[in-house]
Image (cartoon, rainbow, N blue to C red):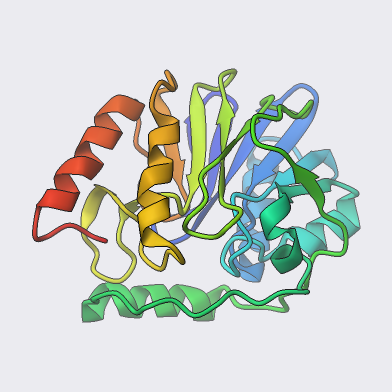
Length: 243
């Protein structure tokens, strides 16, 4: 799905990955579950590209529903995979994520999340080669993304900012649709390993002037960062907030 020129989504409001496209090729942000590779190929074909046009795969963090097809595409295309140093061990399969507390849930959205996992399952492979990036580092790949550290959801959670495309890819630093309750609107993401730190880290997005905020779960927010952060503050005060 095209969000804006050069900016595409793979997947849907349950689980999403993204593409940044320019004349030099394609950058993929997050890799969903293994079965999302089918949707990646369809989206690439729709814009006249193939996996061999992928120059980089950027991880916002190394949870299973964000690294799914990364190794398969890396091995076949030669694209380099980038992650925060703090999440490299998980991305390569040498470290397991700890269990987090189970947030409140509603039956229908929870079943939809489970069904998405079942229908997009496949052989999940640890990523053989991952390049660590530092906070503030800008990569010379399509979209010219800059890493912004937002630890909390995982120790190495990062957002990727592309001023070229007026966008920030936030992974699970926040959500615009709670996967277990279905509650819509900007809010803190569930399952964070350090919920207090995750909330504090969102302050690092203040001052960003980009329009599009692209989460791993939920619809794209195109109202700019200041209004999104204001909505998150409001959700924390409301009893129906999604955290």
